[in-house]
Image 1 (cartoon, rainbow, N blue to C red):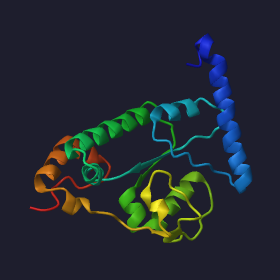
Image 2: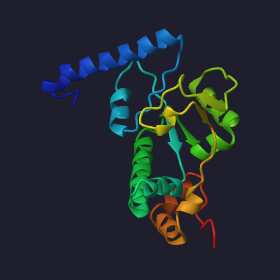
Image 3: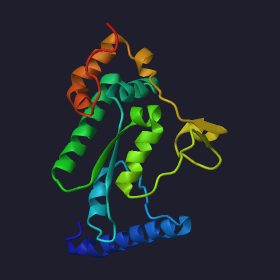
Length: 196
């Protein structure tokens, strides 16, 4: 889009807006690192083209079975969710493979919940910032997670959610692993059934 004359000026304006926004947030917070929680690879590729931004990728992953169980809880199909998960992870793999020098960190949801200090130390080191002692309880009034019902409570406790073990029946778990097991394994998750 940057090379099409009709869009070149618009893209330059969007780039300037992105840089100004990040700089304003960093200045307001007295920070050196801005964490953009975008989940769309297209946005990442646009940000890569902005020379003022030192972009690094934090790949937050979750066991495909947990992702599928979450979709099932909301009335979706576990198999369809596993397909979405697999396609998203494959797209991330392709994106990173096309950019071999791109700094990237795999951060697994389960590690973050079970060993938050160790996971956060890896993240801080990757971002080039000093470590701080994390809180295991977050006061919702000070932090806002848009779109997540947890934001309405008084406090949020960091804890591992493995309700997929009871929410997915054996058949759903088997089907999820058939669809997404290979990528699940590459991200460090067990590919065997959780129960026999």
